[in-house]
Length: 381
Length: 54
Image (tube, rainbow over all chains, first blue to last red; front, side, top):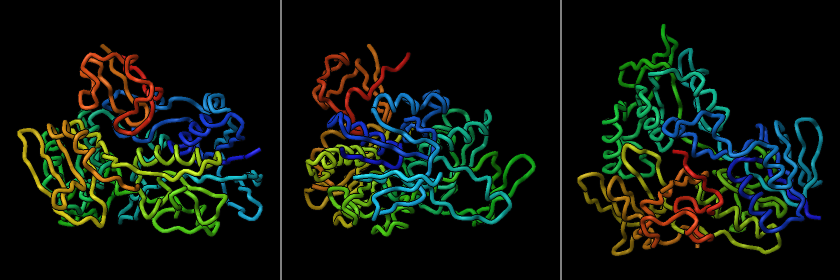
């Protein structure tokens, strides 16, 4: 009998397990996670306040429910220390080994952190999983002042959620405008203004030189010499694929674990899925790529080799201050942005001649999402 | 009229509004949406939605 072992119980690991169970009731399935194995959706962490959810409300099931639903062995609070490709087994922190016929690495991505001068570097919070989020909510008092380092997608979502809940928020980063890797500057400016109206303060084109403990919280010194006082400091400067296990096992890794269109690594018994994987050169840490990948990989693992296809996959940014949907053009796409300002919002289309290659829709422009998505080329076909 | 929320991405289907862009008329009840319908934001199935408690 085929034994499939999945490392990781995030959206990637659990959704793959569910897709596998839809295909086969017989496969022997083991999932291994360093946390408690509760099934929750990471994107939901950045709008928990607006949804009036406590960290404990977010899981849709605990490990016992998942064991029953998936008819799977789930090893919780267990870390995989190594992959033995020769023996086709993984070694656990307890020293035990688990043999596999097929191994799937779904270890996700970790927040990028770099040390900042001062005596409070260790107090800087990150929110990349439910445990982080619980810690963050535990220290968040009413009307806290939160400094967010990183004006990207996650930084903006948290800024919106916190400001709407009555917290003072200052967002700091070297970018010219928010979400600069996904949005053209003109569009980022519209998002910036909408969040400003909610009370968010911006310190853009600035970096954080040092963070020190102060009487009531923290003092951040910025590159232009100004200081920002905050009760909490949240870092959201980006994610990096967790390739540590794969690299140690000698699998090919670039920005992520390198896989082909079948999500197979350079070892034909090992696959990678989700934020840790680099599929055909693309690391796309969003939900839709992972869901498409889980469906294709479930079929492949049930001996129906199925390439993963990515349709156009617009990303919904959870900033209720102004609805935001973006489908960024491919990195090497040639063309130019065209902007249409609306009373409420902006429509930005990235075109090469008549061919639409990407868009950013804010405010009233989001109503055109469906029609415009149909005009976009697939990301991987 | 109820609202249904995608447990994966937070997308909300509002029965009152429907999804006219997808040919789902305003007022369409959740149970009347085809079973093979997928979340327009993240591609999961109807089974991954839960009713929003009002």
